Image (tube, rainbow, N blue to C red; front, side, top):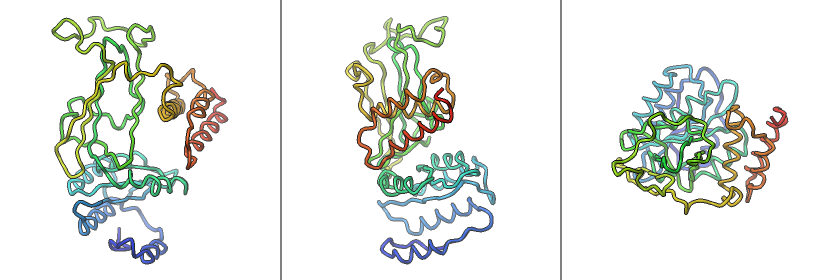
Amino acid sequence: AGTVLMPTKAAEKDKILNAIDNLTPGGSTAGEAGIKEAYKLAQQSFVKDGVNRVMLATDGDFNVGQSDDDDLKRLIEQERKSGVFLSVFGFGHDNLNDQMMQTIAQNGNGTAAYIDTLAEAEKVLVEDASSTLFPIAKDVKIQVEFNPSKVSEYRLIGYETRALNREDFNNDRVDAGDIGSGHSVTAIYEITPKGSGGEQIDPLRYGQATVNNGGVANADEYAFVKIRYKLPNEDVSKLITTPVTSANEVASFDQASTDQRFSVAVAAFGQKLRDEDATAKLGYDKIMEIATAARGADPFGYRSEFLSLVRLASALGGNR
């Protein structure tokens, strides 16, 4: 681990580019030492009320010093208390350690992205720079409670690495994800309405628990959403709540917004690639149909690129 260029103002562009041009690969990867050095430099040039962030570009294949995920997690958790945030950018393939990169990003008040093409680099570092670099909320937690009189079954699609215990929602000491300027987050739940006949799980022998008044409180609601977040420079969370009612319904899938319908296609594609039971009877052609109809405005071609991935997967998998 070494320092090629001390913290330098962006106005000194030639000096920065010259340092980059003189970089050469060699030897082993002392990831732990590199991260420590980066945080030390960030502290030396800390800007009060400004953007203070370590940006780590790596394949995650640390083989000198601490390389265990839990050890690196503890290191990052300690460093985040300084007010310096972290972004992790994955490069390369074959030996890419995505799990490690996700671990340290999630525990360092940071974000993670995989850069495989110049277009993806432009998306993450230019087009989405504000959401990547400028946090507006940290430790953002979302908790959804479903009404058993309206919803008999539900499942959250994805977010396996982001799940929190129920008791952690109100615990401000528990770390969570961060939201950047202009950043949006989509969470998709699949629900089975009560009495629809689509249940996959046998009913409980002793029934659902009820409140003391003999029924379920707020029986007209589908669910209740709670969001906790901290401002970037604060350590005490704020709470937002909202019920989900019939007023939030749309009459049909086609009447949902293009973003909502496209996100459903992406979620279905992810499950299809993992051979999930829920998408066993859903072909790539249907996913393509949904995504194509919901492509909408696509100025940078990201959604078109997704459609190309679906076509490729379909060709490789025989559209099963």
